[in-house]
Image (cartoon, rainbow, N blue to C red):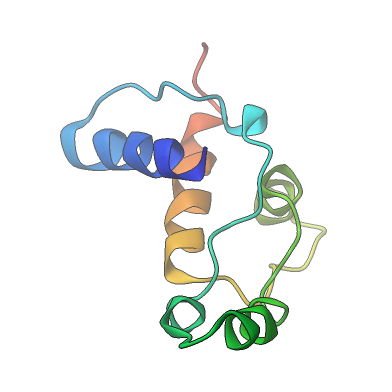
Amino acid sequence: MSLFYMLDCGFVMFFGDRPRFAPYEIQHCLPSHEHVYQASSASEFTARFVQTNQRPFPELLDAVLSPFQEFPADISAAGHFMLLHGIPATSVNY
């Protein structure tokens, strides 16, 4: 699901297209940091993956939009891209 959402993010940001996914219907965690996917074994991948942010996307988007919550830590570049896409999408009528 996150790959479809990333594709949707790209269409909105680069081509001015209308979002096809409402931000709160996405029920997944954000992508991990790039170094996680460079692991040479399954055990190394598991060890690296545990260190990344595991909060679900809607909860992280609420934290970004709220002036009362602290900005989430340990977010990957792809995760920031997805959160930035979710901010303007919260004001779109679907």
